[in-house]
Length: 146
Image 1 (cartoon, rainbow, N blue to C red):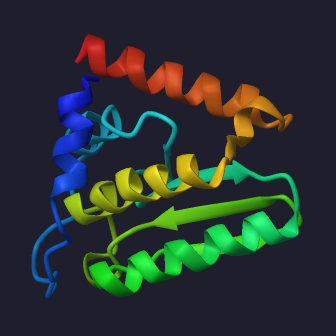
Image 2 (image 1 turned 90 degrees about the horizontal axis):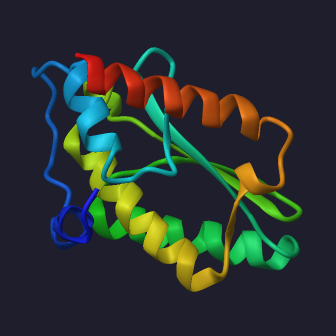
């Protein structure tokens, strides 16, 4: 992944999705996922997800609020689950019941918010990190062999 590719997503805005189009296929989703590498595919390419770690409840709450403000600005609303020291963000385009480029645009912008908020990637602190890393390595290997 190059910085230019991530910057490209950061410079875009979400476009209204009115439905009637198919969700992204697995190959396209995996290619876009390389531009937001700390996210992972979930629900058979139905959504992307990432968990962030924070030092306390207030930091997680502030992060969730900032993501909510971004969602209102972009008019693309993620699922946000948070608690003491953590927040999990899930993205999918509800009108097409799957992934759209908007989801990856939001992921890149959420990553920027997380960096500013001092978030840590949950993989570093969470026992499930080995599974996520293995899944990411498997997805990466499948991309290179396709």
